[in-house]
Amino acid sequence: STRVVVLLSGTGSNLAALLAAHADPAYGARVVGVVSDKPDAGGLVLAREAGVATVVVRPGDFDDRAAWDAALAEAVGVFRPSLVVSAGFMRLLGAPFLARWGGRVINTHPALLPSFPGAHGVRDALAHGVKVTGCTVHLIDAGVDTGPIIAQRAVEVRDDDDEARLHERIKTVERELLVDVVGRVAREGLSVDGRRVRIGSGG
Ligand code: GAR
Image (cartoon, rainbow, N blue to C red; front, top):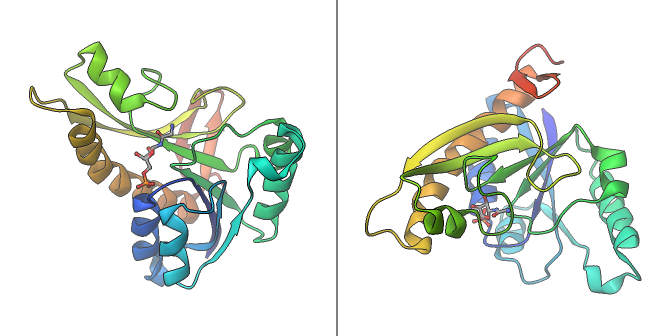
């Protein structure tokens, strides 16, 4: 099955959903490693409990951004993945990382891109007053949440929502979408035609 490395900085609820899915061999994808920029990320505990190897690559341990980026690329490479999933990884992946892994990295974002990119997608959507938001799974490119979109799901905003409550509802949908996309990409491949991405016949 397709070897997947998950990048994360936080709780890891998306990772948990992937770990639940990969228990079924028919899923087609297997999380073989988890890499984090934060030693205290909750997702690392979930990974270890599931017997998945973890690596922490802290920016503070490197002279500059490019060195960290190269170390991150190297740490991922140890697991020989064919797919890298950024699931709550709160740092940009720079040129040295993308030179090696570009085209094989997908990200999940808690808004309907291209609206509300960046670190506060839920807060920004709420502040803008949108009535519908959602989540996006996309390929990572050099920009901030600008890569070609693979799949999206909509979530309605309620009058009494605050950021935490709305984010929780988005995350419920988001992990389902991510599990679905990772499994289908693993089994069917991706075909990319400019910005138009579809799952299937991509090898
Ligand atoms: C997810 O909602 C993910 O989309 C978001 O962080 C959350 C991580 O949750 N990522 C971003 O906002 C990236 N800009 P998790 O740690 O429970 O999987």
